[in-house]
Length: 186
Image (tube, rainbow, N blue to C red):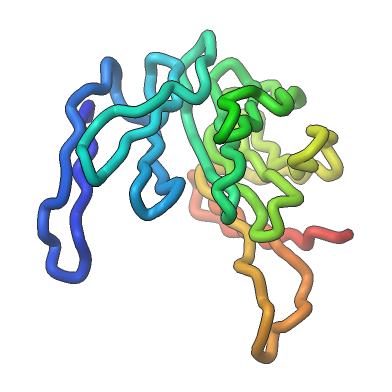
């Protein structure tokens, strides 16, 4: 699809629609409750302002289709992946690339940021999941899946309750239905 629809839950009321994409949408995420990010087959990560239903900025431009996007929990940076096998960590305010992550040999399919903002995880067609430092782009761990990883997420921050202080983990799902859980060791 080339349209983005924003609905209010639980009522399901239509709030906004954006028709300005020039290519098929591959991934969408909220940066803030008012800003939506979308990646497209045109290689661009674009932002949209919900209250006025306007296209805002092109935050990232790849030479190949952009396949996924994730935002830091504090909204300070985004990480986006491309079919060219790279990812970019981009500062939201300056719209400048902080670091390019190079290490996959297949198209990047999914990405996520840790709740601490310290790590980025990515999965690619090469069956690997990589854990990177968000500040300097070092690959600090690599795991192999049995099939292409298609979705991944970090555990949420545990500031209270029985899991307070529990280590961060990454959960990964692949296109063959396997689920993996990896510890993120500091």
